[in-house]
Image: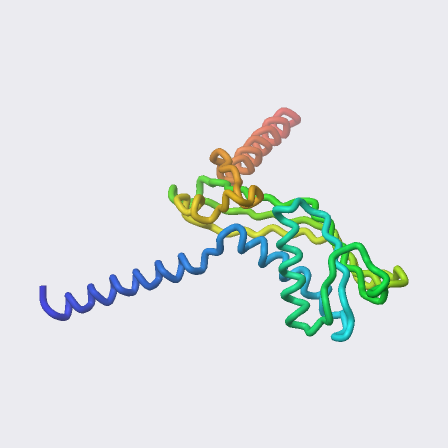
Length: 205
């Protein structure tokens, strides 16, 4: 094997190693995905709060998820120079603060396989659903919405255990049994419908 071939092979193998490392680094674990979804959705509720004002944070969620909302709100408040973040309920000394009310309704992880995927690949679904409302001290609602989002990506099947965290049940998902390609049942229905149509059309003549 000449020097050129050896050098080309080494460059190729090094490139594959770098690509593999990048792909692994780019795959967020399940807990990090939930944090990202919360951060992205809450950011617009922090922006309307003036720098010299404070936030009363009321989170209705299980303790194992509640801290994520508290952590992300505190982080965003610091980045936006919010005076302070207090836990609900209000006290007399901070009645002018805005109330940020969050009610978690769904946090779930699932894995699904499809016939069109390679055997070592699986699709990861992370669901987040909650109601959020920002209210003034006079009970005037500034912003409110039902936030629903589904994070979806393709991962390697052997990554599942690495991406989950046993300390947080919502990061642990069930692997659903193999689902057939969605086009297969549609094709069968279309062909069946065409045959029935031709059959009755022929009989009517």
